[in-house]
Length: 133
Ligand code: RET
Image 1 (cartoon, rainbow, N blue to C red):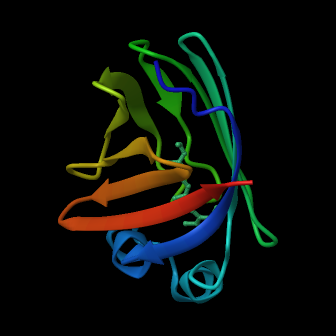
Image 2: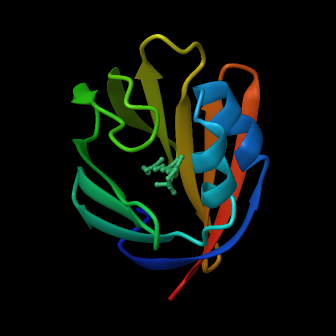
């Protein structure tokens, strides 16, 4: 199967502003966040994942096991708690984040040496692309 493990450098992003607006992220944070080139460090061990998003401004980490619901605090993002669960859809990792915001979640997949991340919240979709370091 796919192995997401490794360090991934930011390449580009699309509509991150729309996603952050849908989450209710404040103006000042959005202005800073949209200039960031975050790095992803992913550790995958069987069905266990740890994903670290790091930037010069703020970091976000999440740990999960496929199919096991967990409480996500989204600390430093919108700080809203969600019940999250990540499953495989073929070779895609798909997360559903159930909480106050409708249609919230993300998908991760790999194409060649690029990692794609689609972020969803309400009617907004943002796509980010990373390249293997
Ligand atoms: C940053 C900077 C501060 C403001 C915002 C951020 C967004 C981070 C996001 C991380 C998503 C992580 C995922 C991990 C699982 O694969 C860059 C921390 C809003 C959206 C989906």
